[in-house]
Amino acid sequence: MRWFFLILAIAVVATVYALGPRGEKFSDPPFELFPDMDHQFKKRPQEPSSFFADGQVARKPVEGTVPLGFAFPHEGNEGNLSTDLDYSRGDDYYNTGQFGDFYGSGFPEEVKIDEEFLARGKERFHISCSPCHGDSGDGQGVVSKYWAIPPTANLIDPRVIAMPEGQIFWTITHGKGLMGPYNGVIPVKDRWAITAYLKALQAASGN
Ligand code: HEC
Image (cartoon, rainbow, N blue to C red; front, side, top):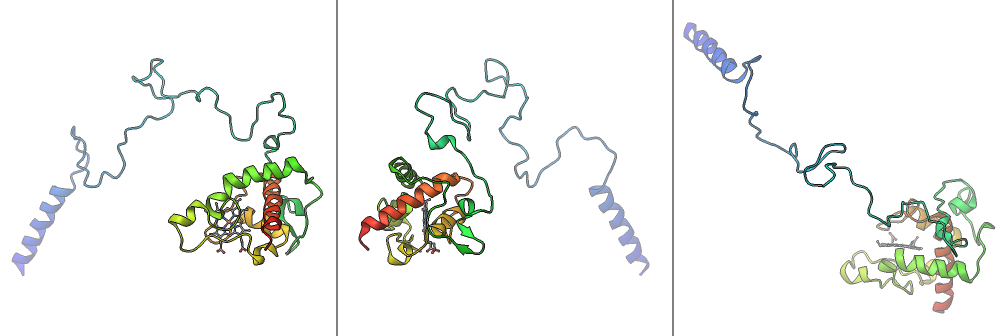
């Protein structure tokens, strides 16, 4: 037993000495078993740079960059809906597609359905919806060729045709299943424009 305590004491001292010297200064960087992403080939803002001629890391935006939520005033831009970048989350029908807990039918009085509005909806539909739902809304977008399970919804199916406008607006706003929400991406008015265009596609489908 005596020997045991002696050997234990020596082992403890040896271990502490090997692993735990404190207060000593090392000139070598510590050995990193898992460096994770501690060292990266990147520059932090305000750091100097030897790469760019002006010696600064911070760069100006590329010429012609248009900041999100901003449209340059130019001739013919007055009626451009993209200047109306309104992602607001009010609780009225215009902003939610709902009256209380129910989906509303028809379009809110804030939107005026005319040719220009539908053209806008068509353009936005082709950008945001066609890749999955197809140009005609039949669910045969390009995604369906690569990603067939689960299938993207057929929007000219009688089930979807029966949906009130408010429900379509709500679906664009919040998404459904694998379809993501578009409330931060598509402004409120454009969501109604897409809804109007989708209603036109459904009417034209004859289903
Ligand atoms: C990334 C692919 C994708 C995009 C882009 C997409 N959707 Fe969908 N959408 C889906 C999928 C998948 C479903 C089926 C969701 C489910 O039933 O779980 C669906 C369902 C729907 C439905 C039916 C909802 C229901 O209750 O059955 C509507 C209406 C709809 N999408 C409209 C749109 C509109 C309008 C756009 C463009 C703003 C759009 N979707 C963009 C994938 C997409």
